[in-house]
Length: 372
Image (tube, rainbow, N blue to C red):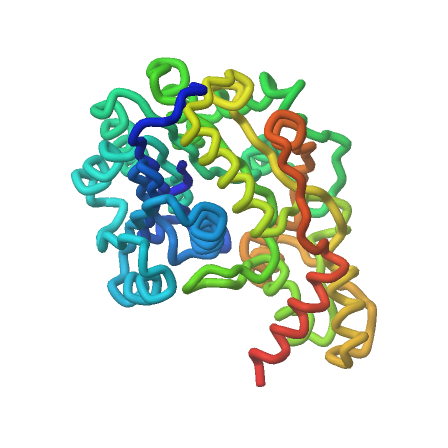
């Protein structure tokens, strides 16, 4: 539950709730874990035991030791691990289905970062009710770039691995992204965020749609991504790398630490009471990431490390591609290229972590080590 996160005067006591979502292989589902941060500002987070949520918790505590953080965690053991790693963080054991608990935590926070789930509408509605009780606040919600190829994926003629020239622009092209969300009722969380932005202007919203996320996380529980380790695993098992179809489809990608910094920048804006319409509301749509090929690099890294004997990359089609790789036809077979202009030009966010040239050999070596 979390992906969360006012004027030039010294801020009064403000709250910040962070609902953090964990991405699972095919569709991110909830992993209850909450964390709160405060700087004279209560904040709550969920998903802190997840991959993205854990990295966000790490980033927030490092960048703002003055914050008071509360985190909602479903598992008591994970809560204990988080408490040991971050003694100042208040852990609340509960999950996204506990609407009253979520609503209560949100009502005490000025900023809510909901990175725990981009599917759980009940918890988002509870956050909305809580912030409405408070009277104002900031809600930063995680979603996913699987929105971008949704038209292709729903077509009976969809064939994984084919190219597209379309590149989404979250600054000049934000209206096209809004139209895409509104034309697909299945994007219930995305549509609800737009509803809040339109009908509850006292609650400032931001919707972040990460692409493929990579990199070793620094969170207290989960530190591994999904897609690149999955490609590495299949390459080692089969003795050669694989790709979806002809391998001409392209997704952007982002390092988990760079993604966490984007959420942190948004949280900081909320803590300072930002009213910038280019940051929040219907314009507050963010597509972070850059693009690079993956399968060929996995093959090269695995061969260089003596794990396979060939640079051959096998083409997989449905249904095998979805059996071999988590949501393979989506993440590796569809197209979701974007320009992260709003984050870079409006917020000053700049990715600074290692790229795939460095990450893929590391991930391949880690996968090989885990198999010993």
